Length: 158
Image (cartoon, rainbow, N blue to C red):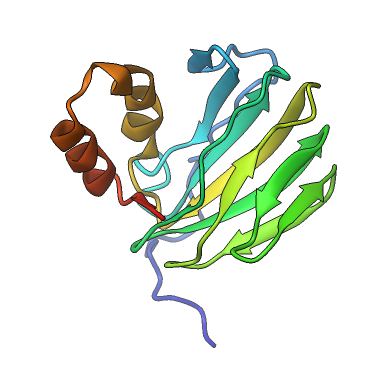
C-alpha cells in the first residue's frame, strides 16, 4: 500500500486547521441524544465525516443495515453502546472500536438506560448530515418516500 496522490502542491504549508471547542452545542439535538458534526464530508473535502453521537440513556439506535459506498467506524467514548458486527451484539465500553467496511452489516444501540457517547467515522465523507436530520421526519413520509430517503442515503435495511 502506498500514499495517495498529493493533494497539496504548494511550498511551506498553509494554515487550514479547523478547531472546535468542547462546549460548542451539538448541531442536531434529538429526543434520545444529540449529534455533533465534528468534520463533515464537505469540510474534509470528501475524505471522511466524523460525528460525536451522545445518547441520553433512552433506548435508541438503528436496526441492522449496510452501506454500499461508505465504511463506518465506531469508537466508544463513555458508557456502554451495543454494537452489532454482523454476527453478534457486543457491549462496547470506552476505548472499544469497531470498523465496518462497505457492505458490512452493522447496527448500534444504547440499551443501558444510562448516557453514552461515541464517535462515528464515515469514509469517504458522504453527506450524512441530511440523513441524520431527516430521521426526525420519517413518520410524515409515505412508505415509498421512506424507501427513496434510505436509498438516497445509502442505507439498506435487512
